Image: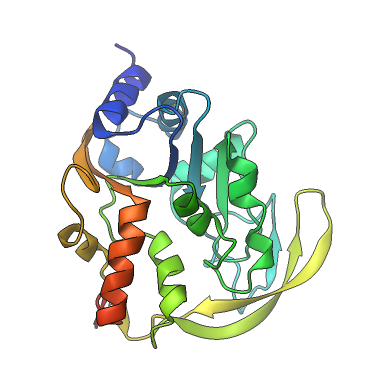
Amino acid sequence: MEIIDIIKTQLNELGVTGGDTVLVHSSLKALGGEVSPSQIVEALISALSGDGTLVMPTLSYKYCNKDNTYFDYHTTPSNVGVIPEHFRTKTEGVIRSLCPTHSCCAVGEKAEFITDGHVLDTTPCGTNSPFKRVWQLGGKILFLGCGLRPNTSMHAIEELFEPDYLFGDTYEYRVRDREGNSFFNFCRSHNFAGVSQRYDRLEELLAPETEIKTGYILKAFCHLIETKAMWEKAGNAYSSNPHYFVEPY
């Protein structure tokens, strides 16, 4: 069996099905040395069976920040791994949202809806961000061998509660869009000074096999989360303890 077919079968067994909207965090190293980013992306798209939507964070906060306030839809790279960067640059039909620090790329049935409103927000993961729109669509979040800590969607929930560690300063960025038009955009930064993110604590809140599923894709131990359950239960946790998902360092 071809490796793409193997990955597709394992994704289906984990709970990724045709028509799903799935946001993916990933570690190529965890999957094993015999697979390429292109094979992973192809298998994910195949598992979604044509009418689904694949989303990946293409965060660029290491390149676009207070020291460099220019974001280009086409040329600003992501800093969250080789799989999303391959997805961003090599996948036919992919669309990128406009956010200087926390953009996402998407391809598929709901890609336009997921990406087109992000530029309206003045925070990285606001009301119109892909992270919230995946939740609105009843989507899923897949963690391919990277554990639950790199869960950018949790920032969208945090922005509803505004815990004291979350926000930093606001910066004015020059943004160049897909068509080459340039404009200025204000975006508030995330801070997290003095705390580390503990989004892995979600696992103790979610029901196994229904709200969170686990299994292997190749050599990587993976998690699949239902966003509806995540938003509800994480929101309850923030309401009772704003520091539930962080710890001092």
